[in-house]
Structures are given as structure tokens and as C-alpha cells.
Image (tube, rainbow, N blue to C red):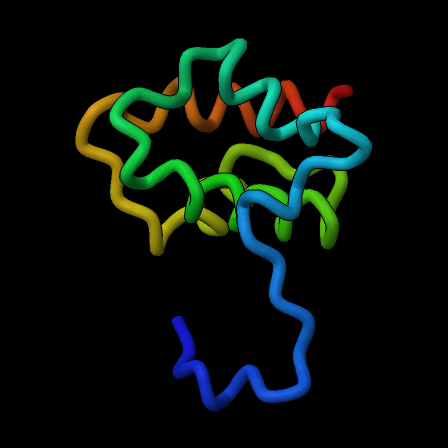
Length: 92
């Protein structure tokens, strides 16, 4: 987490910016396919954190996925399906 003022001059990508040419980003699609979303409250943060991880490391292991998502709390789905979705996106 950062203060907005610390982002001055940086490129900011929101969950809406993940889509390209009306196509969901692979992490968005695999999150749907794996059942990693429910209420939607945590979903944007998880998607952005997951995309950032996959951009840095296209083939993360489970520990790296868990570490990348440590700042996101999900009370509906739990983390198993979310982690499965990130693994699926890494394989696609």
C-alpha cells in the first residue's frame, strides 16, 4: 500500500485496465474459471496483485503466489481457488 502522492508520475493500472481489445486478461478469465471470485470486494486487489506477480515472474510457485497476495484478504472464497486461478493463468 502506498500513499497517492507517492504515485506521482507513475502509471496506474486499475482492474478495468486489465482488459485488452474487449478480451479479459488471462488472470481475470482463470479467476472466473477456477471459482476464485464471489462477493467481489477483494477481487480487484487480487487481480492487480496477481497480474503484477505474473508480469514479474511468469511461472511462480505456490509460495511466491501466496507471498504476492499477502496484502489481500478474502473472506468468501478462501485462497485455494484463488491460488489455483493464478497457477492456471501462469500456464496459459
